[in-house]
Length: 338
Ligand code: 2RA
Image (tube, rainbow, N blue to C red; front, side):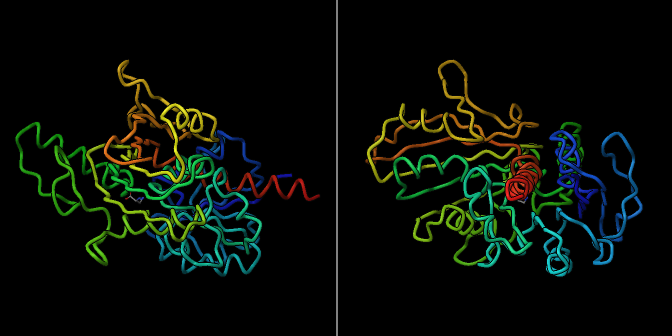
């Protein structure tokens, strides 16, 4: 039995990765409805060996859809998702619109898949930098407990969208050729630079990106008391977010025990032999669906404290693959319930 599936935002970077992942994982799509805002409607996308015309996203265009993946702006999600959910469509939303709504499960299947049991046709997929963090933290939390988390992110420009990818290339070319190129996407040049500025600045000098990491991590791990703090940085990388993560565990642990727990965790690959040049990098993990962890080491200055280096493809596990995995979990649960 297949499903009528819509992808809202089908022409964007994540929308196109969603189509790719749906096809790769042979998700049972009986009917596909690629949709976009009026600005992109009429373009064509490829799926299952065919070219598909992209329709304009609307409540009517979503009528009768079983599962709708939203990979557009929060504004589009707020406009269309609730009504689609009320009409019976299961909405899996990548935007930030509903992530902190107590009635909406915020789900990384291998971390808190149980939260899907309470969905009311609207499910939020977390921010890309949150997903890779909680996939790595969950096995440590379960085995040793967590007392504190400090994160510094190094986020690829594809997190901002296709225009940022083009901007990075244009700035690099201009830089190499000695031409001036006023920044078009970020407030300052991103080529040969790093920007401690992901999304807008908000309360207490933190950016929205940093607050997302704090709030979403606490919701997904069901630890509203967990001290989490973050600095989110944009780096001149095309695809792949990296994170330097400092943790303090509740219980004593060794580096070897952390390695074992991480290596046994779903969705995690440990690459940790720095002396042999073995550690994850964005360039190496682009195109993969796992979360890669390396540089696992004790912090000698603080009891029960450790550093981790966590890298993942922000467009796949950080967005498209996580959303499809949510759909797979729902479909699987439905099949088991029959
Ligand atoms: C970014 N996490 O990297 C945000 C949204 N994708 O810009």
